[in-house]
Amino acid sequence: MQHRIRHIVLIAALTAAGVASAQQVVKIGHVGPVSGPNAHLGKDNENAARMAIDELNARGVGIGGHKVTWRLLAEDDGSDPKQGTAVAQKLVDARVNGIVGHLNSGTTVPASKIYHDAGLVQISPATTATQYTKQKFPGAFRVVANDAKLGGTLGRYAVETLKAKNIAIIDDRTTYGQGVATEFARGARSPGVRVVAREFTSATATDYTAILTKIRGARPDLIFFGGMDSVAGPMLKQMKTLGMTAKFMGGDGICTEALGRLAGDAIGEGKVVCAEAGGVKGAQEAAMADFRRRFRQKTGAEVQLYAPYVYDAVMVMAAAMQAAKSAEAARYLPELKKIRYEGVTGTIQFDGAGDIQNGALTLFTYKGGKRSRIDVIR
Image (cartoon, rainbow, N blue to C red; front, side):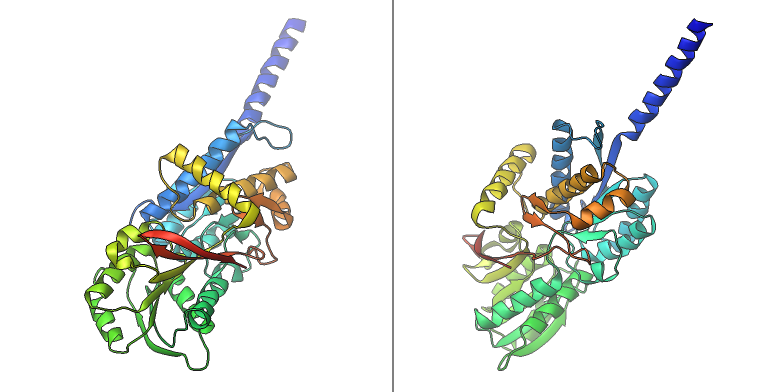
């Protein structure tokens, strides 16, 4: 009888251990475009998310004194809003513990409603549209400065530093492109400054000759483009063909290592000025340099743009879970709201809306086809 009782107790213990083991898998969902024109940026992001997850596992990072297995569930939204909401629901159904993504504002904003309705936490490493956090979803955060800061800062820089007087503005009609272009226009408002043209294209267009020819007639000394590098590169080539010598500006969507390759010799020397949301200088530069080295060593590729922010987004989510001793969104959300985390991109703290506090911007130009930093400003 005693033997039988011990046998039953052992079975119960093993069953409980199996349940406990099953509960110790923490699933982080990542979404970005790994197909389509922005695939190079989406792959950059996904690589960084995998790197963070691999490091958490390698270091044996647990939660509440329990060993856990960290798992990445990666999905492709193709920069398409419909695809974005479909994969968002897929991750909800997979019962992920949190979301890092999306890359594009046009996919992030509609997907955020799905995550909110499911009670999930979402940290975007790249979305800059002000609309994202204006929805006031308690679980929506971002680790980069928004369009109001990015576009407005570029507008003021165009007028105050580059001394632009006649400005043309083009956007790609995406949520991001229109948003950053509008904020640029607001920041550039100044006596004696004229917006001589306001045109638009699409994120998938390849011929901009008609738009550029029309703009050329207005004789702008600076053109601002709200969109991504996959459009900006060919646009710069067509500007050169048309003999247009105006300065070219854009937000973080064009501010990539790949732009030099996409534009070829049309990139010029100091002709392009752009801003990346985020940036470090001084003592923090060592941590960023080390991240870039480790990323290159692990992936065999250089950082394109948002990888450091993806990495930090995963790590700050894990830190909040550790502080709460739980991977349940309802329990670690309060910790995320008050967290102060030293990441490779700098100090991460969120304001009441879920925006990064005191977000930095890095201004770049291009020399010899390579990005060259101008300054980091806050």
